[in-house]
Image (cartoon, rainbow, N blue to C red; front, side, top):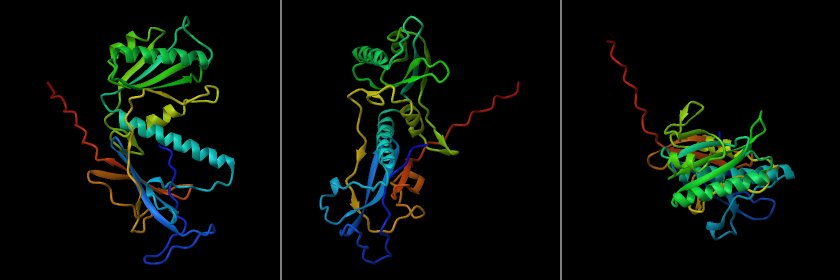
Amino acid sequence: MPYLYYINTSGKKKQGASPRRPKGGFDMQRVKRRTFSGVVCEQEVYNVPDRIKNLEKAEPRPRFKTEEEREAHRIGISRRKHARLINENFGPSSLYSTLTLDNESEVHTFAEARRIRDLYVRRLKYHAPDARITIYMGRGKSTHRIHFHMISEGVPESLIRDQWGLGDVLRIEHLREHNYYNGVDYGRDYTGLANYLFDHWTPEQGGHRWKQTKNLKRPEREEPKIVKRNYSAKRPPRPPKGYVLVESKETQWGYLYFKYVLTPPKRERRRKRPIE
């Protein structure tokens, strides 16, 4: 399941009451912000100081007790950014591939693997200039051999195989139309896959957690708006038209987080074959 952070609910007030002045000496105003990525809409509700007039730059600024908390928060931002990129750019027509190296091509350092990865993406883009790609490196848990995972849009399966040539392509499959989390159909929400790939990175690799082509589309992020209602995990904002609420919680950082997905299409039931 996706890593969730955000939305400061400190300084709660009753309807019509004045907000409590925090220790810093600033009055607070509550804002909400929506981010759309593919079929997913995320809504955050958090407090910002009254002195901030340009809400476009208003971001939640939680306080951390330890450096470990600060680092966990930073990783959460990166994780969320990655999941949004995947949801915005890929769908059931996209392919998920696993690429391995044979004995002749095997490398033992991620510096060597990074060069193989970059040259491979360059070859794919030469033959499919409009392709959108994210690619990841990892080590097998039992073999400890370096391998690659890739999500691609606009790259034929034959091209993935033909341009690899350094070992086996163990898997090429389309992303799912229906993704289930805790028994709930989230439709084309690929956050689970995104987090699985995000976690392939280890400090041994260094550098960025993934490589992406420059033509990936950015999620749509709305400007924050001042909140006029009292929201809580049990009293979420209304979903956008055509969306359904799937997650609602107050996070460890004291923020409210709400997640909606575009109502998934109904799955077609397979017809039973008549008994001959």
